[in-house]
Image (spheres, rainbow, N blue to C red):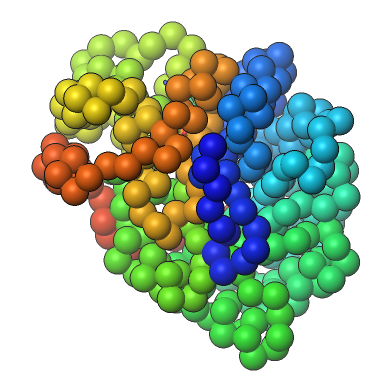
Length: 332
Ligand SMILES: NC(=O)c1ccc[n+]([C@@H]2O[C@H](COP(=O)([O-])OP(=O)(O)OC[C@H]3O[C@@H](n4cnc5c(N)ncnc54)[C@H](OP(=O)(O)O)[C@@H]3O)[C@@H](O)[C@H]2O)c1
């Protein structure tokens, strides 16, 4: 495993991290979840990403049990706050009240005294940004959170947060967690240049487009048994990539991966890691063999000719519009 700094901070994260959205507490049984976590640890992954909202808070519990008993100092545990964790109007968003209650719930479920990175899962237009950032800063001072970051914030929102932090002497955000893969490149024009200048890393989600970039979904054919596309929640999430144009073009990546001696998943993960602003690719897995396949993308270099071949194949299906980075206008 190789490690990269998280933004302009002293924290090192594994280039490939393990995330448990849709899987733990939901699509996969606890035994499979434990096997995936074990495979991740065996392969040198030290960074684990979850969120309070995943599987209605059960995902944090499953991860907490799977990591229990390990040396806490050997792990980086990331979680998030924003999406609803209860029925009430204050059980969501980035208010002082919800953040304070949510971190306490996350720490209890994860069975740890602190998380290494605490992330605002979206931008909350209904809470003053100063209130959110002051609360985050308080959590850092209380030792419940070591670093703070955001997820799916626009370049403007990240810039505003950094300015407030600098003016008020708050802890600065060190990371953004956007969707990023060879098809979905919306961070490249605005977010990445700002982040490079400001010492903010991307820790990216869906680096293999939820499994689509493995090439296992064939155009015009039934989806493979047990895959995310067969899961009720998963099917809705993966739908954005499930059309014949995308699936046909993805098949054309197979010879490129084969020439390099890489699996399709390794090619997709290596692709996001070529961007030096990416500190880590967060991969999900429903089976341990997937983790063992994916982890081999660490340290792989792709030359300019290969990157051009990939661009030529995916061409018209590549999404680059920065306006696709959005948070709900009102609290969800
Ligand atoms: N911040 C946010 O808003 C946000 C949003 C989404 C995700 N995330 C984070 O990012 C993490 C990763 O997202 P993701 O799960 O969408 O990422 P992904 O790595 O693109 O997709 C993971 C899924 O692809 C399939 N897969 C993985 N490796 C494979 C392989 N080698 N061969 C074949 N299939 C393979 C598995 O699904 P099946 O086996 O079921 O097909 C697996 O669950 C999440 O767990 C979460 O931590 C964050």
